[in-house]
Amino acid sequence: MHIYEYLFAGLIIIALLIGSTVMVTTLSSPASNASDKDQLKVTAEKIMTQMLLDSGYPYDWGSNTSVVPQVFGLAKYGETSRQAYELDPDKVLRLNEGLPSTFAANLLGLGNSNDPSHKALDYGFTLEFNETLHISTQQIGSGDTYSIDVTSDYTLPLIGANVSAVLYYIDDTSKIALEEPNGTSYLTTAYDGSCVFNFNTIETSKVLAVTVDYYGAQAAKLYSFPAGSGLHATLLGSNLIADPTQPYNIASDADSHEILLIQTSQGYETRDFAVQNIGNSTNFTLSNPPESSAIAVLAVSGSNGSNLLVADRDFSNISYRTIPAIRSAASAYSLERTVLIGGSTFTATLYLWRMST
Amino acid sequence: MVEVSIQHIIGTVTLIGLVISAGLFYTIFTTFVQDDNRKKELGQISENVALNLEEMINLIKFSKYSSDYMIKIIDLPTDVGGRSYQIQLVNDTNRGLYVHTFLTTQQTVSADSTIPYNSGDIPLKFNTAETIYNINVGVDNLKIACSGTIYGKNGVVIWANPDWNNSNGNSPSLITIGIGWVEAQQ
Image 1 (tube, rainbow over the protein chains, first blue to last red):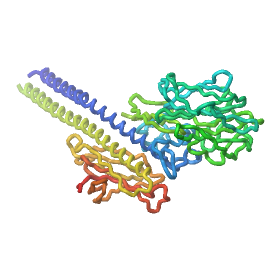
Image 2: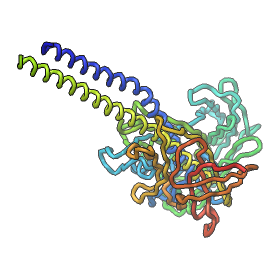
Image 3: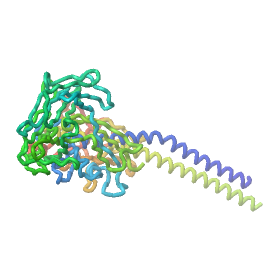
Image 4: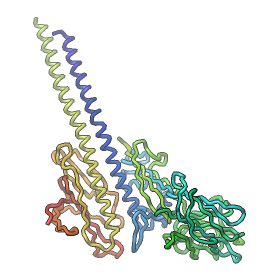
């Protein structure tokens, strides 16, 4: 036997070894990947359960911005009753207002998020909220006639949605007044997803409050008219936070009302109740936090009481990310749940991925 | 003649060494791959148990003034890659509450899953004592054996019990959760 024959035999053994290891790796890879994805799915369900069903602690960590939550949960806390998948509007808003982006990861047991390089994080996630029903309003002509369009998340017109609408406006005494539509307060959307409400003509600053009920999915929104004329602020806890471009000026004795969403035998509609304030002209604070079902606060603004301020909550831009620059990784698992926030139905989407393979 | 024999001896010994080395390497490699797959399966089981515990905690928090035991029977695989495994509830000062699963014969092959609920408002207690409970579930009277560490199998029981003593009336003062198995149905 020559040296070449030994070398050849050795090469065959090494080739067999390499071939076998490659085969073992290749054969086990699909099962391993499937196992990884299954595990990610269960982890996502676990995280989503904690975030959407637990109210966190302290229970008021949303409205009381001075406290840091010890338990992370977005559900609305009720002393006497609780509804599954009903979230606290202030807790959801606080996700974008001053809560550190990696804060929840520690509380949810997803690794040590205090490491600035995120190397100690086991998982990364993004939580987003999207409206289930989309409402758009349009003023027809110069009078107070409004066309209301209801579409789905995919901009398809929704036929048969139950819609109600009322106008809030400033009356002659600089107080907030209510104007109901002529005819019925409830209308059903036609084949094109729209319906038209007709009101008596009002010349002062006004807000159209619209509620929609579509087979259990609901939405409530307020629109200032003429478009772009009203003032807008964000409602967070008891505070009305002014938009930088729209500073308001509210007298301490100015009329202010909270708008509540009420379920009646016909559907959903809004009601308004006067609320007291303890703020000053540019930093308006309610004496007590608004009711949990409040969708907005209206207040008369301006030195002559001519402008109507709408303070509401916008959840459509909420995107809570453990890593601000990353919305979702290629290997992420996404999980959706339908939730109720501030009287409107939203789809909560969680993107969860592993930080290392 | 002597030179030829040495060449043969060296070549043969080298070949035999190569075969043994290749065999060893292959065994170590396949063991590593097997253990890795088993770890992933154990990870799935840990996550599944943790999810059920998490759901149970939330159910307890939703059920006001009920002091009944809540139980859920889940089916888990009887083995992982042909080997038996165990599930353990661990309360660690640094890591908090987590589910630890491991192979019975090789405890280094293990996986953990933390429970996201971290006892801020209502303290959570793992029941790790070996106890037999008789629990009425509808028309069935189940005899459930509980322990801090159990073997994985079909019919694993996840249970929770709220304690309303010394509570403020809105939520229980303590939630005890545990794992076990159905020993008998009477």
